[in-house]
Amino acid sequence: MTLIKSIVFKKDGKKRYGKGFSREELKKAGLNVREALKLSIPVDSRRKTVHEENVSTIKDFLKSNKKVSKPQKEENLKAKSALEKA
Image 1 (tube, helix red, strand yellow):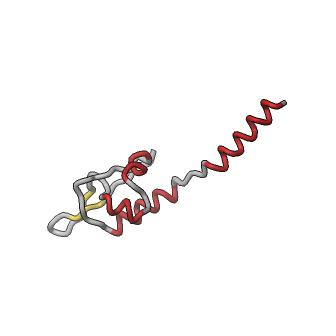
Image 2: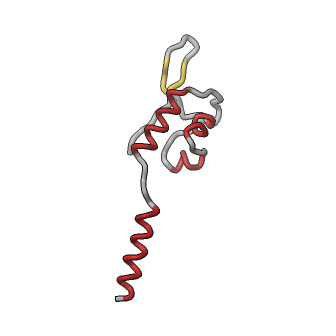
Image 3: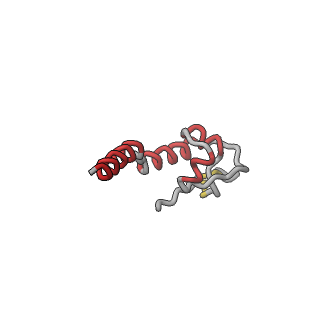
């Protein structure tokens, strides 16, 4: 499983890894909190900031882990029904 980390900025402008992504970052990436937790993406409910680096990190993660589940399910159902009829 791939580990994904958010980046936050300290007061002096330096970057560090955060505890998770903010809700607004998830919203801009097209996810809600429940979907993010299912995908093992950490969520920090205390954070209010939105960093574009984090949004792009989430989008890249989603592209690399994209699954096509609906066509596989339909094919599996057709194959099972064909086996049962035979």
